[in-house]
Length: 286
Image (cartoon, rainbow, N blue to C red; front, side):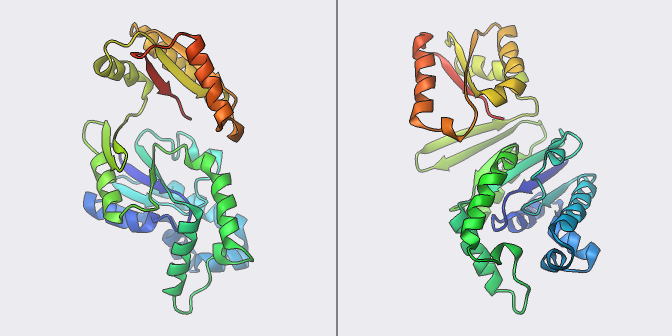
């Protein structure tokens, strides 16, 4: 069972609100890193930014997060920039096996409106750093683009733009169980999506495919070249060791591949390789 849940994402995504309700539902303690920073420094986050600069704030925030990750039975609501460096995602920090990391994602316009709404409720409070400057919406849009590669390292990403907070909390509470396997069902307008999460998912992939698609002739493992360099080999070997024929299909990394032309490359590889209706396609992300 996980010892802690860590919520990441941009300001306005609802990490503090979801974190407080989730901690109550689980009977755990909430650690809000922004609140802990302010308690330690006896200053607000905007005041730290104004008088000490962002670099000083990030160092304080990093120390607070590392301390929080030493605790058990906690829900950690991080600041928007707490998870945007490689060291933070190491196995000694967010990448630890006992963590369940969750990216709460929302469109920039939704985040902007939430931040404005929050600001109007703070009488005489300092303006959030994100709301300062000429065009905060453009800044939020660029920030999401730049930080998304880090946030995508989370175990689970939830699009929270139009979701009720109670539903998000329910999903995450259901994701924590005693067996170490988390299963979530998302009931969406287009149908039900069943999600299972494990630590070391490549060790379980063969058994899932064998039980759900016993007639599969071939498993096609699709990944971009960057992810493939780090993760493709153990996935393919795990399938083949279980007697399942696996064939990798890779494509160039980067946003340019997220296009009809990129999709065409995958289609050509599948059709050229003789894909059949009963085959299974595995999308390998990083």
